[in-house]
Length: 209
Image (cartoon, rainbow, N blue to C red; front, side):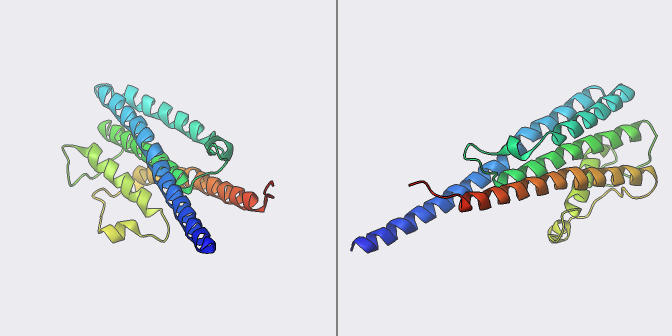
């Protein structure tokens, strides 16, 4: 009877631990998304307030890009470890998605302002009266298109309304891809690797009596 109780207790503890880790990953995923959405929204709000001064707004977006580039370079495994010393995969994925979302805002706003200044031509077909929303959707589409294996856009049947290829549009798109791949995705890979190594070390660490 005692052995059966121990088995049941062990199963219950295992299920509780699994549920706790799952909930932690979900919360960890949502936390940076909610925090960074405020950053992206704030950048957009200020840029729209400067809409009457497109040159000033353009300089503001350029400064935001430099600051955001520097801020993400400061993210290290030590800075995202929890109190228990672990790095939750859900948090890393949420952080990468949120960081990419801010870059989407920056590039879409920069493209919109260049369109306003007639410096770069974009063909806006869906909502020509509100090109910023289409540009945001376009950069979001190209962001998802960079995620390997999942083919998210194909699965959702989502096609972009704005072609960012060719000319200076293509140069901006190339810069966007470089930032996403070599900063955002590289950051996520580095953090996930550090989290995995930390879990392996914790398994090998002797248990104190």
